[in-house]
Image 1 (cartoon, rainbow, N blue to C red):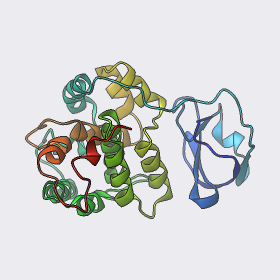
Image 2: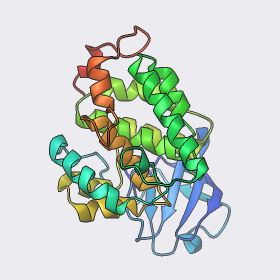
Image 3: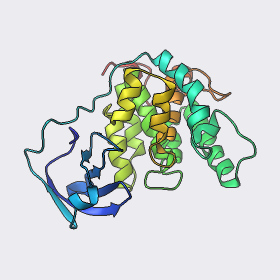
Length: 266
């Protein structure tokens, strides 16, 4: 069981091939997953999720199963991680993922062209010091249980945590929360530097094989998260100025994060 699962009664929200999504008080999320998905801060790993959650509710006792999965993200070399992502993402990211923002493919479907244009507009807002406007434009962008924009924001916040910019991660979270309780759960975990086992392994020892493993999550969720991470880690990627470059040189408005607070250690 993940170390961020809270005790209480959870109700089934949705069932998938390898997992069951449940929501508890205050829309807290719990994911009962099989071993192919593996551990995460909000995951309960079992052999057969649908048999384990046979009814419509599940009670998590105050003293749950031990040991708990420790979901804190490990320290890593951001420069090495970025180099691995730059090489491996174009090979392993699905063609309809956000990787096309940095590694363009031609031709793209019309919806994907519009989506990527929306992200570039968001980047322009952030470059102009309008952090809230940029984050809100990305928030909820895309289809699925967790839209691509929310996965991207998770990756960006993880990059902030890697660079010891916890204050910036918290500010992104403040504008990123929406009406999707599942996205909100993942966003909150990312802002705290909490990750699943696949991301944890990637950070412990970055490699192309481990990038591929993260990209296998969801339809494009893993790849979209890594796109947010590579953008947040700095340096121009595929002609697109990075989040760290923007925040280092151009983010100036009082309503956003101040240059001092973005460098606060956390």
